[in-house]
Length: 151
Image (cartoon, rainbow, N blue to C red; front, side):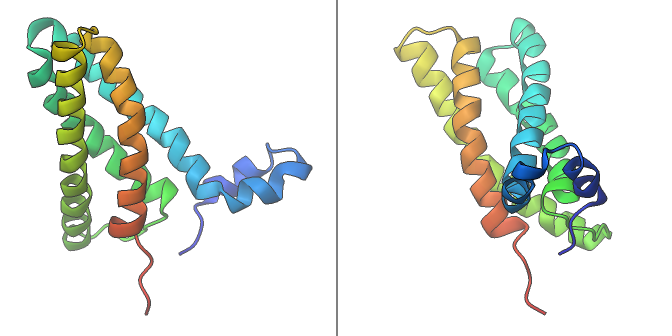
């Protein structure tokens, strides 16, 4: 699996003493960057919807929008999967979204417990849940969806 060209450009921005370290952890660092972007997409969809829908209804809609965004950026920039034919994309996306369903259920549970049982505003609980879910999603995507294939 070849690294995306963006890594070569970004490597020039990193001070020389840190290049080995950042290269070693490049996939995790890029996942963290795009994970933050995915969280932003999720929150930008969630908060306006939560003003007109119940928070537990707004969350799955925001989840879907962020899953589509996340799949595309993870495929292209994090896991360097360059095959975009319909069959591959369908298989990967179903695996990617399937794993994310588990994290959606986790997030819905965290939202409900934090809001209904603990009395914390759903907006605050949503941010905390997003951090936890990001770690779960990373390992699922790395280990199951975009794993290296032995040829």
